[in-house]
Image (cartoon, rainbow over all chains, first blue to last red; front, side, top):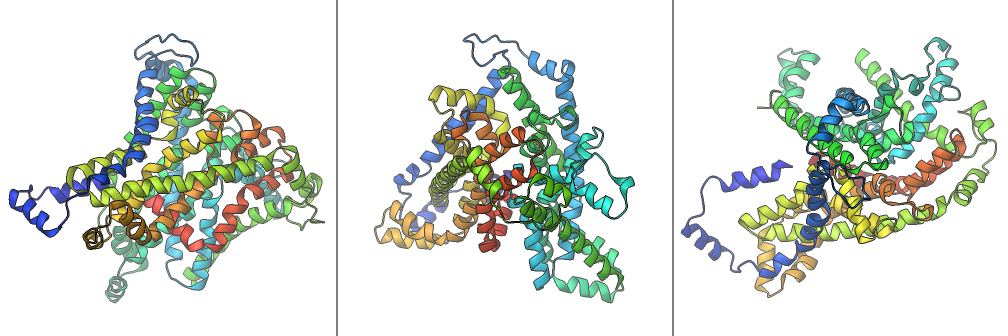
Length: 320
Length: 271
């Protein structure tokens, strides 16, 4: 998001426009900017201002009230809602912990797995292209559909997972999956990776295909093994793709709202409650002020984690 | 040798993990509950559309299908139109104004839908947009406009300026230039954005869940969700619903597969 701003700023930075520059520019483009052009972005700007920016600012106002959404009275309660969220509301802190756990699991698993798939499917052979299309496929399904499919896989009595395990004589490994509170979140993480690994694989494939082949040939001549080639050529070169994958996966798994609601029901049980489902429950409970405060914490959380990642990922070696 | 065996093993196993559940769902949508539980992997005994009939008839999934069609069919073009207008202007305006407009529109990408759902609900309530498809369309447009501007504006900035200049020497106004030059030349990125938006709008759940109250105004994902509540373990019915909800996207994917990958990846790598 800061990229366009960054590049625009950089492009402007080297020299501030002097009078000769402006004159030159005017000579180069015979026409001045047509004022009618300012009308073009107007609808978009108006809609975003009125339906996105204004409500978001309003969320800050609601967050310091105890408003229930119906009464005319706004009681300003200061930061009470925020204090309540972190100190008195075990449902909220539970959702926060679940959410962070979930994000961490999905980011690690999905980044690693999508990179492995990409590495195995870099070559443009027919088989690879077919498998890429297959692996990408789940991404286009609705979260509710994916949730139902996996609810069936995990069903302790009739589910596919236990049927397969039973079929190959591994009854000992059969489980109750989502029914097991200690494990439920892991199994939803597995579903989330199934849902989106193919999408991230494509981002990685684009990164991998940009690596010049000669580098590997040279490395092979120097006697570098596969692991060494990966460490010193592949990994540094896919660092930019990795930051995209990690950043996108983080935001995506923070907002796994639909999937959780589909797989766990509405409202989800505590072991599967994450921030977005908690905010929704608070909202559905007519605690508008408190829900607004929670959503601000949610937004801050995403911003913080994204910022942290930017800092940390800068440490990975860049392809130079 | 060993490497190629393990490569095949990993790819093969993952292919199975994707294909098998989908096949079971497809077969299962034609089975009875008993038949499904007796042999989830077996072919259905008959291709009776009973489940589909029950899903469409009994649960107004039929009307929710059309609601989804209407919402998506309006949301996608409107978003594209507004975003391409803005993108076009940004690519032609210079300096601070272009930067400010772009920045303002794209900033919205940082605001997750859950963050402003309370105030948006209140605002929609005041404007009488609750429980209406118009409200859903508006919410869809607002939530995806930032990223659409990002994709289209980013592409339009790479179009050669000379083309615009040539046409303005000929005396064409900005509108004509937008229609006859900027839009046609941006066709690839418009198509990519269109598919990206199609998938998002078709599958959108949060806004219908927030805004829609009457069953007649439900969209498919919402109808499916409430459906699950009522038929806890009637998996064959759920499967028929899943198939109906996925069909348009899947059919489009089969034919436009390359564009889907390009479009959704553009959303991922730019979001």
